[in-house]
Image (cartoon, rainbow, N blue to C red; front, side):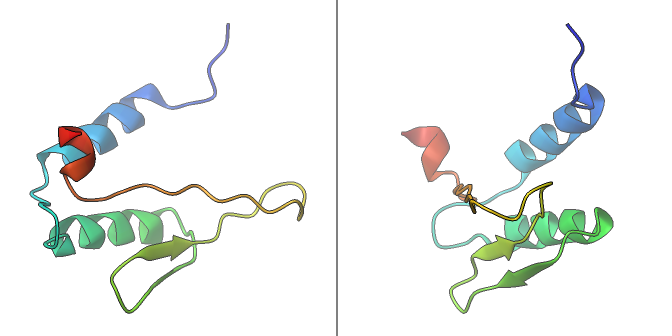
Length: 79
């Protein structure tokens, strides 16, 4: 079966995310890292006033819209 993911890229990103200090309420470092990666991939994004990242990745069709939501702090890893 052929995979469409660049596994070495995925491993690198996951390793960097997991190594980035991001306790609840102190996510500036990981938000900065993710924003830099989005810029490198030329994916438009904006930050909300609470520090959430909103990225817009267009697909082949314009509807229906979909959303993927993820936590950037380490709380998710502890639960």
